[in-house]
Length: 393
Image 1 (cartoon, helix red, strand yellow):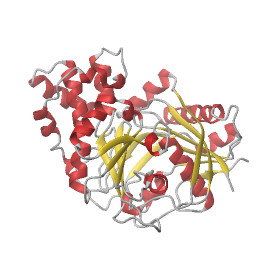
Image 2 (spheres, helix red, strand yellow; image 1 turned 180 degrees about the vertical axis):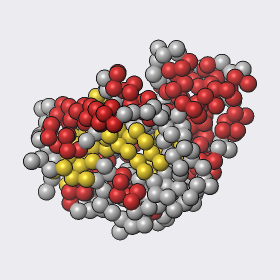
Image 3 (cartoon, one colour; image 1 turned 45 degrees about the horizontal axis):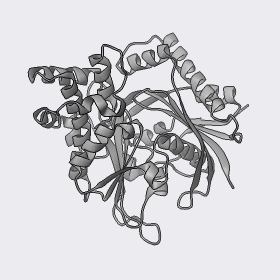
Image 4 (cartoon, one colour; image 1 turned 60 degrees about the horizontal axis):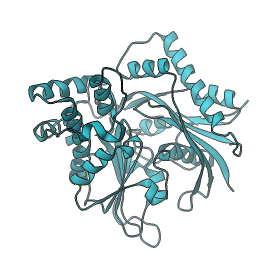
């Protein structure tokens, strides 16, 4: 039986709320997804600025925290209402919310030291109250998807991997689905046999910085006039400093084996300050700095594939905002030689709204009583139901 579900997410770039209205049917191996509408709704600038400040560690009173949580819920609810214009009415919302803090298991939250106690559970906070969204939209809302996986010992990320398995596995090609938001994450999809069984283990992890450092650098280098490098045109005018890239790739996170996850807590303003200080010692021009940061994203992706995959993929399917950065795409292709770098659009799944579609699917699975995590990806001890259900009273 088909169901109309809305998926909502704002990623670590805090660009705005991606909303997808999808028609869903089936369960897992027979899952069928049709995107009916997709749109991105920008945050009000003051709200976006506050979110970015909190992500960088700005202190909040409990009153301010509650107001921020409510403000995010309100704009998410507005996006859910807007995406249904002229479309069938949804009966379910899956809202990822806005991540403002992510601490992987074993991390202190002060840093991502690999020597921290491995027994410590992770913690991840996404704002945007589900109960308020259900009230404002009149639609049952599921949110807080990461908590159950973390409680089971997992990273709480990446969560889109099981959806990738269902929608993007291929009978011939070993594929990597590489999302490039503020942070990059990958799902390795081995070729499947005639009974829809993977021929090698499914793997996934956060690869490191996606657009986060680039966007911060563009804002800084343009004196606040720009928020991102459209098509990578500015970076394409520069020359990457390979010596710096190799230096930055020695950072602990890149050496850590999966399962692993990260966020702005590591790859944020403080990390950029270090990169800019390093660049100053090499007297790099602004375009060279952007080219070098772009190369870090591309090279960290390739290095992680070589370090942690059983083999290089035949195809890399890009999605997320970074899939529009043509220079970044070229550098990923250059770093992965034999692999063919495409977008998920070319495999039949919208690359701009794939993450929003995934959270619609995760909500649908939660409503059907189907576990939504992949323990082999997140490191959880078992498969669990993901998300808190908020019914309409």
